[in-house]
Length: 543
Image 1: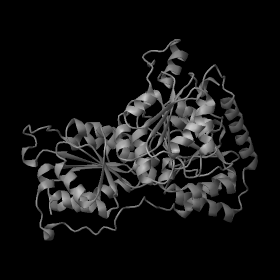
Image 2: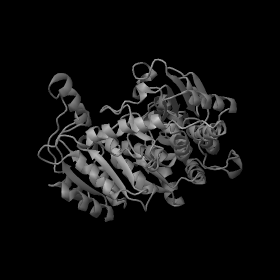
Image 3: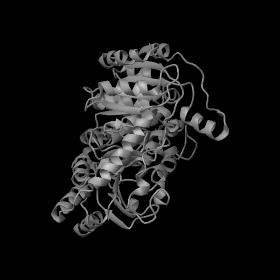
Image 4: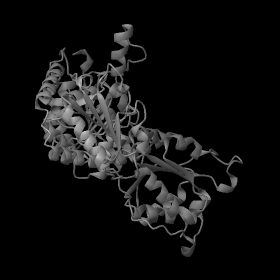
């Protein structure tokens, strides 16, 4: 047994079924060990895609996604996915090869301090110097990735460590229960009761449920709490959703560039559950929040509780557990539901949505034609991935009756271009579900070559491509501010023909009635399919 064999065996113990990777320097022994052990290698054409696959696995499954890159610039490429996981709080592991330990710092091929580069983005970053300690270091990395607020971790594993022969009796033994689970921590009963008292004294409470609620698997707790007390709930745009089915209390996203119903500024009690104090909630400063509003923050990571503006009451607990406790506390106190406020909030939501749906239609196809087709095929299990600025805004504002955890957006980073790798990750995780990627034309071309990798490895999904020949959300902002677009125009591409060249299916749409049949055909196919929809330029911000 060598170091690579030990690393693979430990990954399999933790339930890892596949590694996203691109072959290269420092990975040969790991690739060989995976192949012999039956640990699937999903190969890509750019390390950036491998990183995106790993972080998408973490965001979709609440478990650690794993990718492997070769050294040097390949490591830097893969850090794009690590950066996205850092912003979103997604558990993932990047393991990177390197030259031998003995020549590190002497100028061996692609000599680079990879740990130092990764460390600012990671919760744990180490070089494995001794193969016998692989179980210990991997255990520490996985626990760091899943504890508190989840996040990315990194291990550099040099060639000599992967290739070293190891005696079984020399391996460090770790008392490991297997794949770690998200942190589950109940709130202190006294603090929970104080929140219940604040709710009883409020007239217009608002729950802001961020990614931390998703990672705590708090969807059912959220639905029960908001329904019992008639509390409106919003999700910061790009955060992970925790609203698995339509509920009358869900008001959609908050903090979108295209606006939204007026809720946060009028709330007298703001409950942040697993959400960040950032630009999407106006940094919790007036006028985004009412000057007299009481702010309560709930988070599994105590460090996150006081980031930014802090809160009048901060509770260290996972949001799922805290919301369940709050519901019971409210029941014991017989707190009346805030029905009038909920009805008013729903009226504002519906009025805003009607404005979006009544968007000015010019000659040609519209982004709404794509969203309406998606609505026709949605089931509770459909995985929807959204990659792009303007099309993302349309999707969030119109698909606002639910926001389940198996819908994936770019995350808090606001990145574009992750969509095809994320669709590959979704197919790997859920082989029996429909996977739909709604993408803009600019976003798609970041990783478009991964169509070939997906087609070759039997990973089907459907891409609905909204093509307005522009970086739409930037163009909208430029035109509003400068009266013209600057570096935000794009040229025409025959995307359907391009997809076919990569081994995928491709179809170009000429009328709105063609979208739904093409979508259904794509969902039934055994290879990736791209549906090219040339659309007029539009933004919900203009409605």
